[in-house]
Length: 87
Image 1 (cartoon, rainbow, N blue to C red):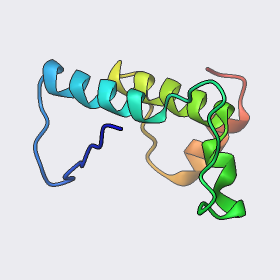
Image 2 (cartoon, rainbow, N blue to C red):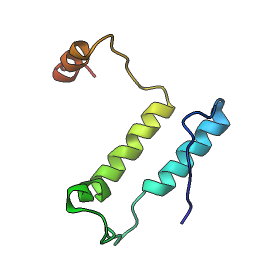
Image 3 (cartoon, helix red, strand yellow):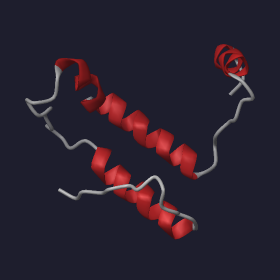
């Protein structure tokens, strides 16, 4: 299994370093057929190992990589956007 350590203080600029991060992260979270949750994972954390969670997590990383994000001035604006029909 490949292991990746991300240093939040490190600079990762440029498309190649971002793609490496995305590819490494994608390979870490892409579930394999018949994969099982390790027994030491608490029951409260098992949802994060589900195929759906892993698929959606990968999709969000791709959106971030592509710049498909939104910024809000405050939490109220974020909640209004989440509750709206706007994409």
